[in-house]
Image 1 (cartoon, rainbow, N blue to C red):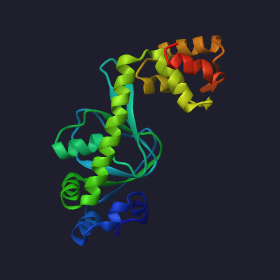
Image 2 (cartoon, rainbow, N blue to C red):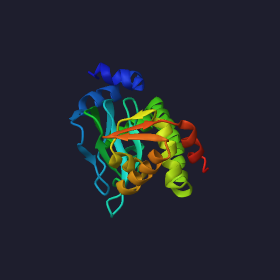
Image 3 (spheres, rainbow, N blue to C red):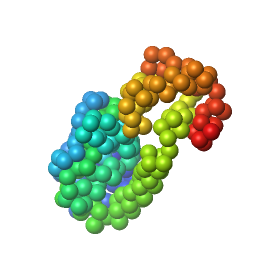
Length: 218
């Protein structure tokens, strides 16, 4: 029987025709992982799609020098489009996925995903809708990285998450695709300007207007 939690998070599963429902009940595997678990890595074979029921997956791209940039997070009720695209195309992963929090999911194998996309239009429509939404957000990310200076991106990042952000400088650098030393230096500059107050894994936004000006390139 399909777990009620899966139906709640993914309502399209409630509409499955009986043959697909039986296959899902037979092939789905429960996945539990603590925070920090590596779920997939660049270059590894793509074999299953996790349907996230609880928790969050961070999907990121790492460079050879160790720098990392967050692409997106997969939350309950969402699909990982990197995984879906790799399953559909039979390609290895181009990115890395880590359990950002304790994770509970259902893992569906590739043959079943192919059947769901082919034979169940509601599942296909959900997947394509998420593709479109995620592609738009990734284009915004590319634009920010390619055309905006880091101080502008950091200011915008602070505004989006303020007024109180409990995060390490390293975690902030990871999200921005930079290195801790540069982010720490910029944060110290912002603090000297009176825009923020820094503490241990704590950033408090004091003057949003000055950050808005900085984010706009002022």
